[in-house]
Image (cartoon, rainbow, N blue to C red; front, side, top):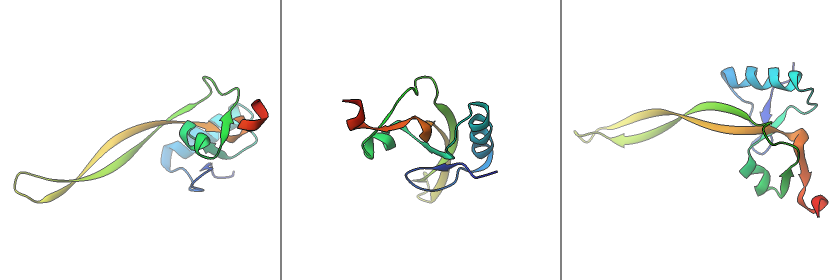
Length: 97
């Protein structure tokens, strides 16, 4: 089974996000292993066609550095959510005009 990856960064998804996307790709009969967020698609002049309600909500963690009361820098990890769409939904913006 091919790894599911982000189209713009070319990085594979990690952990349970990898399994979630692989399952959804198979369930929805997508051909592409690539996924992209709405803003990433806009950034490469692409439009998501027919993707309404087809996005997949994923979770990851972000690390932040913050000084505590004693002045020591500590690492804070917090969950972050985002929605990705399969690259099968991408088209050029010009094609829609």
